[in-house]
Length: 264
Figure 1 (cartoon, rainbow, N blue to C red):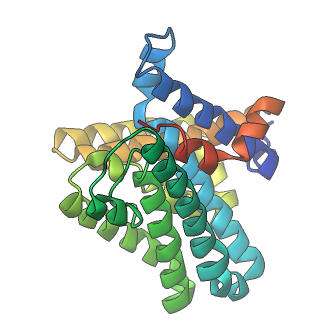
Figure 2 (figure 1 turned 45 degrees about the vertical axis):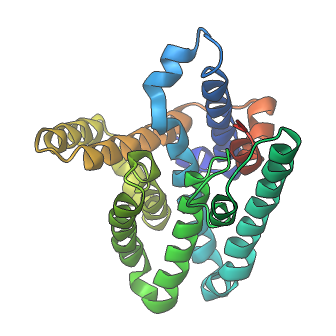
């Protein structure tokens, strides 16, 4: 019998995040050395980051349902500002290392890197995406209240359009819909779980992705695959619990490991 309550517990989702943050670290290491796992991680590609966004969206919606507007009102300080301060602290470490290693960055690039739209060697797209999604959640539930999730989806699509115009790099937004997908799972848990445990759901998602790809909507096709991938992970965990002390430990430090993984 599939146990979705266990699959979506904090312990299990933390463990899954630990697995994928290890994948992210190994994939970066593989850029410098030829390793036996390189083909596998290259095949997974951007999907290895999708669970971070998916579970983040799920976790935030769980808090909103539990604490209501008290949680929303506290988001600017407890979520957005806290995350941004941690990012700035990591960025300062990069600046210090740059100075020690005689790396010369233009002043404008250094200043701009504090918006996460530019980089001095750090992973910035994920930080910008998380800050944007936190802000979208706050604005959506503050202004539209009962239509918060619908607003989040709409604003996320606008985010995709904005980033395409500003950055023109697909990896900045090609899995971003996993965040509102996680929120939808939390809001309609019983209904969604009853659907995703059926093989026909994944057949439908794959066919949808193929159709989108054939009509030259490859970004939306990849978004569908990313969401399908996250739901598949939930199914696997509902069928069989995944427990490992190392993965659980790593899963508690996703941001720290991800942001500090690639000084170059």
